[in-house]
Length: 307
Image (tube, rainbow, N blue to C red; front, side, top):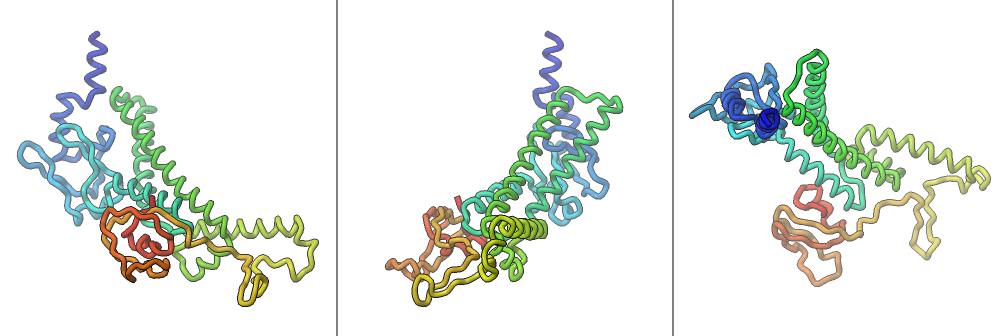
């Protein structure tokens, strides 16, 4: 019974004594990360000074610039975890942005510009958390025994890292699936718009296209006449005068998507053939089913989310 009570004190929160220590630690060199594990603040991290019973003051964006993106967290006196409030350092916001980026990619018929900055920030946070877990594992191997509550918190942190990695892989998986459907088209687009593909995605598509051409040649193209072996031909006037049939397919921008407006904006819907004004106003929070080409620019500006 005594052991169960002691174990319960260690697991449920950080305990009364540890809460008092953590309250004072907010003003010193130690901070608490999101799982309750005490970690040493980086040497270049800005110092916090407490006021009125040890409450920590907020770090300004200028002060937090040196350690932005490290994923460092702190614990307040009651033990609730939250990320540093400086812009660009809130992992919760980054995860929401990553989830929305996945949703936009799944719903949009075309490949959206690669979210390079967002992916880099999430990868930096994951790398930092992995280093923290590796340090804890090394301490355990050297005979430094962690409390039961710390080991439980480390396990929860590993699970959170796995969830974030899954979301990041899902983002890459959806983009590669869409890129393979129109590989030649996106390789052409990447020459005029470098934002369309990341360097790794472009290298992957070039290898994919080369392997596909080799496979088709070995399968049947080598048995057909030379003029018919091209994979990027444009046949004109096949379905009537003034028509053309392009072998390089492009995404259908007239597909319907469900768009949620996060900012008020106006869209030009005159091309729909309906009796609508040229600039149709949309309010924040409106949800409409529209053709993708009408919300494309608003999506790239960040005024619209696809759901």
